[in-house]
Image (cartoon, rainbow, N blue to C red; front, side, top):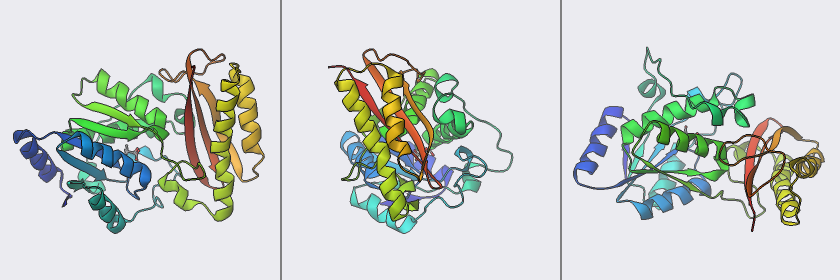
Length: 282
Ligand code: PAF
């Protein structure tokens, strides 16, 4: 497995792979890898000749007072895990390399970034789309894989790729969960045992939402009332949002017709967690 830190070197290496007619699958990450990331890598491994991942904690997607400084990092462990799933190249740029002096260009997707996480994290998606565009330009993948846990991010990136005619296939894969249902996230590392127990309320409330929908409840308010009740029963939990949206536009809906997204962001102590489920009729 190769580890490349320089932008120029990475671009040249990808160019070389393309010249050899090798297809490139790409999994961008912020490191502290877990089974969710590894499932994306395994799928990428199957779908292309070369598998490249990036490990870069991107400062532009964190707001002031968020956890950029203390975001968990463990490069040695990450490299071992990447090697274990057959990654060919790990791109590990520095902040200096990605955002040199004078940097001033950003990519912004307008509508789908406004609701949900866009309300309390207004600059987050601009940071994500900017860094992902840069990574795409450096790694030059044919396809890139993202987890559905970050559902709004996935919709945003698909929109960006379509709108900007990027010749890259975007693949979204299901959320990977712990055996008790907690969605895997690098931020789970922040949780104390008591917080870890309280965090299960996200998954439990989503299951309740699904159950109500299966039993015929289409009224979003009625479903959200039950979801909020389950989360609020945990004294360590504070709801940022609990919403039911159109899964394509991400606009709030009152009545579920066909399909819908239930999306949650909840602070457990100091840790903000997100999770979601798609409801589909039939
Ligand atoms: O999902 C993430 O880990 C990040 O938002 C991404 C896509 C790697 C961009 O920094």
